[in-house]
Image 1 (tube, helix red, strand yellow):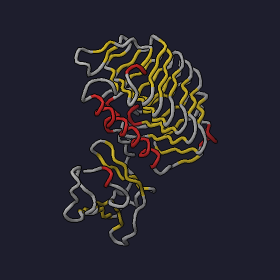
Image 2 (spheres, rainbow, N blue to C red; image 1 turned 180 degrees about the vertical axis):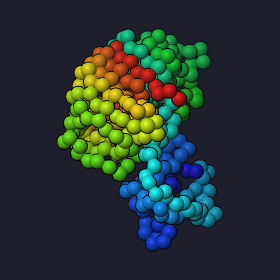
Image 3 (cartoon, rainbow, N blue to C red; image 1 turned 90 degrees about the vertical axis):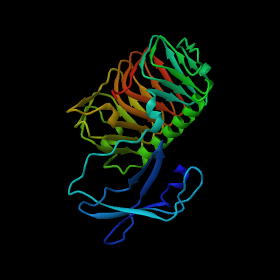
Image 4 (cartoon, rainbow, N blue to C red; image 1 turned 180 degrees about the horizontal axis):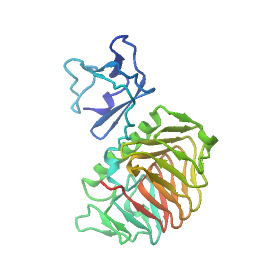
Amino acid sequence: MDGSTLSETTFTLVAQDTQAPVLGDVTYAGTTAVFAPAQPLEPLTTFVATIAATASSEMGIPLAAPYSWTFTTAAVLVPGVPVPLGESGDYVILAKSAISTVPPSAITGDLGISPAAATFVTGFSLTADATNLFSTSAQVTGSVYSATHASPTPINLTTAVSDMELAFTAAAGRAPDVTELGAGNIGGMTLSSGVYGWSTGLLVPTDVALTGSSTDVWIFQIAQDLSVSNGVQINLSGGALPENVFWQVSGKVELGTTSQMQGIVLAQTSIAAATGASIQGRLLAQTAVTLDSATVIEPTP
């Protein structure tokens, strides 16, 4: 399908009995379209989903007729749905303008930068592969891709960057379960799964615990900056997984010295990891990522 034709206009959801429309946002990442309702769906209710005939294929061919299907919600809420990353999930670090390090950093996973060139990946002492599809670095257990590598790398990166931006929008569109927790300071708290929203920045001055199962999802919507203080740890317990933790940050992200971060960081601006910081997750920035002898490890597949 042509993702631009899948929207709140061409996808609708209504309660079957009352025909009451369900408000929400539609996002498209990779090959997956996601509808995020503005409020949790009512339990034990049958809904009708419809894709309008004006939705079309990548060739511009519209559907022959509207397509509808029904489903019924369960009696209880199921675990949250992870934010779809599309092809941006192929990278442990993805940025648009620059990726820099003060050596030695230790990166496990692939790096990607676009539309900036490979020359904007600094401090890694890159060596171009013979194919020129990617470069390598002694600090990276993986490959480094840029917009100036050989085809199809630039096309793949363009898709990944688009998916990163869509993931940011999808995370921002989830209905928050809790707002303004701690007035923007969650130091020392133990948080169960859910969607947390702040209209300000978020400070993490002391350790925070995220407790839940391997299917639980945390989404943190932060309208300004995220600051994790020096030495602070984000701890997961009960089986919680870093790939199910999402930090959607409209401002900049600052991870203090020797701090330990968990989860997928979706930053609209920059991400900076200070000396000795470690991240189990992904750093996906719409500007630059700066590392200072940091460790970044992608989640286990």
